[in-house]
Length: 84
Ligand SMILES: [Zn+2]
Image (cartoon, rainbow, N blue to C red; front, side, top):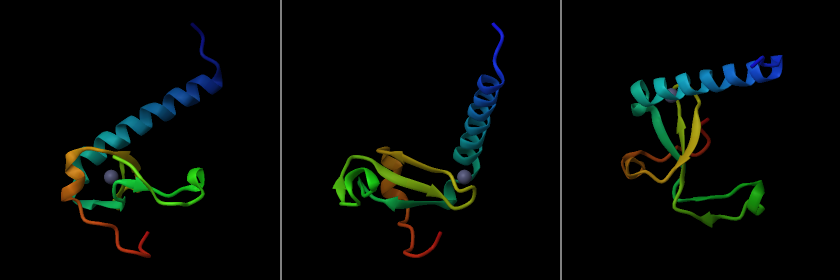
């Protein structure tokens, strides 16, 4: 199968994301902070706080942001207000 330039670019992006997240999980755990603990407030729900099983985590080393309901969240510190 011949990939179009767009498909190729998308595949490369996914591979890069995967490598980045592997690096993050392997080496950056001490930099992880909780942005939103067990809930979310986004444009999606009009910025109203909505409780959820998922917390938003940010890596302050590489900037990766993701949502998870894994147990390790309870051991992570909360992000300080006003810090990127
Ligand atoms: Zn990271």
